[in-house]
Image (cartoon, rainbow, N blue to C red):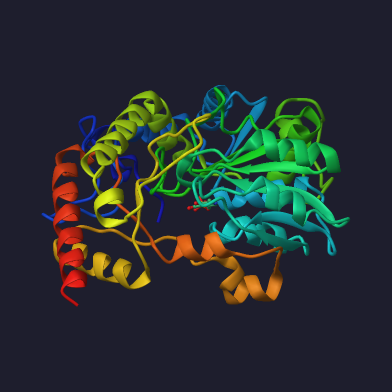
Length: 411
Ligand SMILES: Cc1ncc(COP(=O)(O)O)c(C=O)c1O
């Protein structure tokens, strides 16, 4: 049935939330994550619809690309539909093929390794440094083989890996260095932003990240030849971007590629968040510092670890974690916190011990710190609107830890 004009949606009647309104309805419990509207996200979506282009690479995508390149100090940036997509593009740009190897941590999200496996190459898992929870450069150096083509360095919890040491190894062996900066927008290493520290950087805007669009991501590129090819890969292997720029009079299939481009509605939402990146990062850093201060007694009194980091890096307040004494104490902690209405999930199951990791990858050296970290780590709630709830999380943590310690002492 043809639509009459009176039946069309009246976009100007969409309710526009006040800044800082919470998107999700919530009860008295404090979840691990709660996404927020922080600015003009909804207005932008209306504007994108009015502009008449909902597919990708329109006005908001271009604006987001420019903001991300500026924020990350990288030569250029391209929005993708996820951090996973950005990593897959990076793996294509590395020209990985069967027989090639990529060094990466086992203590990471599955997408870091899957991107490598999708190219037919082998992920080689290396242990983390027990202080920073990032790749240990000495172990990376030991893992390099004649088949190694790249290092994928994860910036865990938003704290950049030791990129100078990793770059030195990459340079010495002619390897590409890719940052899995999914968690690290706004973080720095020796004053330089994550995303500018390797040949490429993959970011995520999944709803659990500092800056979010539900699903979303970006790839930063620090060499012009990578940037030109990345635009082709992102557009299904065609030179459509050159066509849009008026550089060719028709577009065609020229290289490998897939559909990695997000639609304009996602970019419009993301733009509303990116406009407030400074305030969002400041807020999360304040929350992180408050956790650090409120839980400062845990290491000495209860043997529970708090985040530690290389003094040369500055985090972005992405995540606050605790390292319980062992797996049993962690399970008891998560259960008691859940009972008190606070979500404190654990994080990665090490990839080297997962069925996929054992089938597709191999380890280089011991995985002692990966295993020991993965079984003890829990994440505390961390999101833009947590300010009202953080004191309750801290108090509950202290009570639960004291109780668990008391029951251990009385055993
Ligand atoms: C380290 C790391 N890499 C990659 C990803 C994948 O990002 P996305 O969920 O946007 O695909 C994540 C997401 O949580 C991540 O934490």
